[in-house]
Image (tube, rainbow, N blue to C red):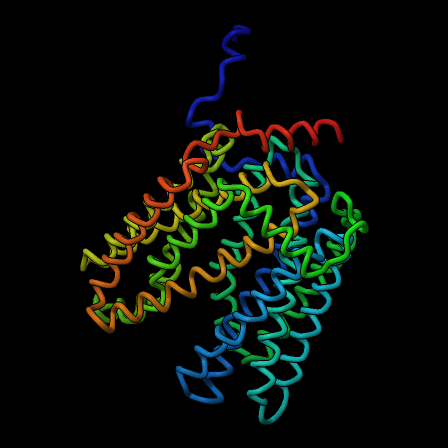
Length: 433
């Protein structure tokens, strides 16, 4: 083969794979990745077991729904506070300490499930505390990735991080169902406790990672407010938050899936409806090598969010189960494309000394949106119809995303080759190495 042929860029076919370079190149990223795979699998099992146990104790749909409401306030409050702590303390210590705390809380669920009459209040209190711990941990965990992965590998790292969430989302509920049927809540919580032990062992081996300037600022309300001011000064960042919030608030219809399954005459397919989006996301992730060649991340985010809305509208416009599953998979894949490029923009452009606080804001943006979407979709369905709620939500998503792109042109025009923030961070990483 000639030298010129060897130097030719890879074809589009060669790029349709998951890029595992960060796993090969960074020991700390490997430890964080496999810790995440293990702990998220266990957490998804507990995610299934908690409502199962509440339903078994109360027999009430409302009681089950209150779990999410109980988790919301702690997640918001401690997500912001966790961001401030991530910019003030050693992020590795934060992650290990909160992982230990979460393991202890799941142990409390296990002990409660061993009682002859498990206490309902324990389930709600622990759910709130787990949400608080998650809010404290996630900003530090998210802020560690840009420090352990090369700047030009951040797109690949974002795709790999998505895989662990997809693995847990697809496999976790299935394993949880088997454990609950075989040994009840005791088996499910016991499995999760074991995953926490394994995860902590891996996290303990990660090197110390302190934020730039850590120790010079104490985590305080002023510290949090300074982070919000930075976010407000970055219109391109605001655009990523706005687009994601709009997409989820208008077109997140998962609360309607039980009714959609009945409407399709296929109640047996409820699980398929819930997993179709995750399957679409996984397909995109496993063929995500091309993402490293994209530079206009803002446009990719806007187009992908609009595709999510279009997919949800098409779900409402068809009565064919195979087509519904196909459109849900397309929507899930589009959402993953948006998620990958949002993560790349955040990791490539946010200075390390505010990275934790920005991660706290990001946590709120992708946690609150789906909750609002559940309320909107169910309210619209009760006022109009199931189909009208799905179609209108998707249309509103497309329109809202377009308005956000017009109102925030810095998002639409973002290009990592010319962004001052991306260039500054790229040069800073080069100086570190």
